[in-house]
Length: 235
Image 1 (cartoon, helix red, strand yellow):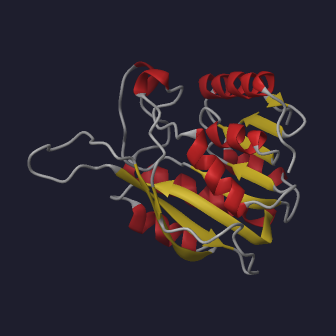
Image 2: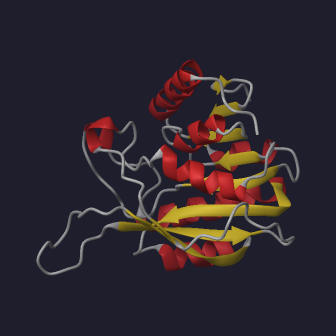
């Protein structure tokens, strides 16, 4: 399939990842970093419109099928980082552990409140990131960090190109620690391309797949802007 967007480091496909991932070279991916539909049946308006494949059962089925399609492309020592929601992370953990060895969970602390029962519940100011690895051990890069990731402010809603857009600075940290120099990052649910931009800024190669053209278009614009702002540091 012809890429929707491509530059020296990054390739983005407009496709269903369950179909496109089967074409990746065997054992070529060093880091699977993705933010799949949480299965929360999210609904919104405008840029925060409903997310496709996010129905409670459909989201988990899509993730399971995506991991099956991606399996042959993962290196034996690959790492995987999968964002999820507190309400669905047990199902996510079961799904991921069927393909990879779970090492634990990280907590992205947003340091802000959130929607919900403001007087009867604690603020939902975090998201979970499952960490898994392949059969062959590869150490993380850099000094050991704690499992709570703080200091990464969420993208303000008016500035988001996708309703669940993650901050590039957070994804840069995850990529720096989990993908070796010259390695390949895969995001099967690329959204507006935050993981691809982070990888490009670090000089890592990246492949993204996104189902909706509006988000592919946003991702392509962001990748081009990142190139204009400065050549990636090859590492």
